[in-house]
Length: 416
Ligand SMILES: C=CC1=C(C)c2cc3[nH]c(cc4nc(cc5[nH]c(cc1n2)c(C)c5CCC(=O)O)C(CCC(=O)O)=C4C)c(C)c3C=C
Ligand SMILES: [Fe+2]
Image (cartoon, rainbow, N blue to C red):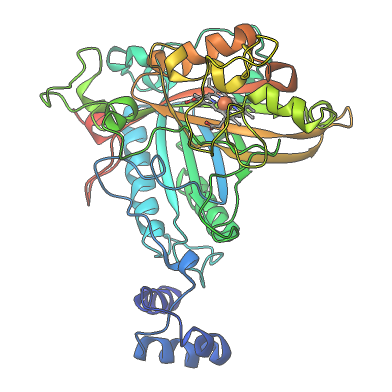
């Protein structure tokens, strides 16, 4: 075990108890500081640093995990000549690395970037794209759910920033922890896979509002209000592929996807110069909700149901017929629903002088044909938000269930 590893384990050994002596650790610093920390179980990192998300479990972490403040979405293509054997070895390496980092332990050949930080809710989530199955000789086991998404009239997709054999979503509540995981994943890809595209995103930092709140996007809207909640009776059925024999098993889903989910990833540029020219009242009509608190235009608070039948004095609906919240509601789409878990992004200014900023829209569902596809079809036909956004990249990935301790993500596909 390296010195770095020993120091880091000691520091993490103190995590959990409140931080009265955290100050002492900071003040003492160096080797003496670590020794003091090891001796005093009250020493702690701030909550944001000390919180960990277990890597192992029925489902992969990073799906129902509360949204993190920093994210990297990365697609990889298998290297020429790499097939099923190399892919299995890669998934084994990546899973081992992710498990270590999520526990706050260093990676092999650690870069030291996150040396003094706790796990900071780090999650690393792995998925397979459609082309993965051709590259590994597993086309016969590819789920029909990975059939290409339909083309939508508003799409302006860049194929170089779309799809990919493999997809990795990294999230953490610290920028250095997230970057550290990104480098560890990239390095442990070795010669087996090459980065195809990478997108970097962010959300609000934990603890910066006076109470826990739904996050805002870069248009300033409260976004995520009507997401399915894990406490909803139909949450698992909507988000996760059922286990065969559980009574809710789905005949068109392969057994190796049990406990898994499908991620639709869209890089959606926001045309902020145009959006910001709208008066706040008009912005609210585009969504159908108030900007200040996310309440429906028909009244109440953020979580009040939309009254889609209510009309104003002139007889027109209070929530307009083309309002985004109306068109995307499950009640308007034969129950189609998805778990939206996006990151915002800002990549500076585009060549035309407008901000290259928007939403790395990531949504999770047990079947994209019962989640993203019908809703996006409807939005594509007449969403008031469409003139202010542009879908620029797209990906669809099968995200297998979680790995057991000592196992690795995707083993049920790659080893049987
Ligand atoms: C196909 C799926 C969706 C895309 C693409 C999408 C893009 C997108 N949405 C916002 C802002 C908001 N969306 C809101 C609600 C909402 N959006 C979708 C789906 C897509 N959005 C759904 C299913 C819902 C929930 C509808 C419901 O259950 O009633 C809201 C309202 C608040 C909320 O419920 O989250 C906002 C605001 C942007 C900015 C955007 C693309 C950049
Ligand atoms: Fe939306």
